[in-house]
Length: 73
Image (cartoon, rainbow, N blue to C red):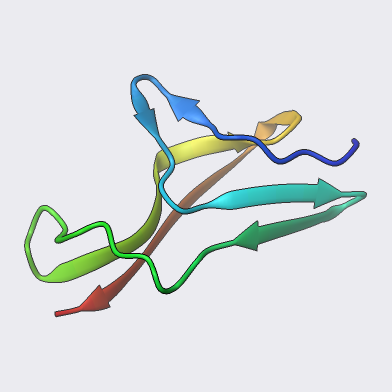
């Protein structure tokens, strides 16, 4: 596997504020903690970053990741 940084699409949804890079066998996830995408559906938290469900890793369809980063209101 080479280096890969690209947006991921799950149907019509895209990841928000998540970048993934693979170098060898190391996955690096980058999230800007200063960003804010508004309230969650429940309204109890504020979304900072999300993969919008489970997505495949760059260049590896077998491995999936589901990520949500949020803060309490």
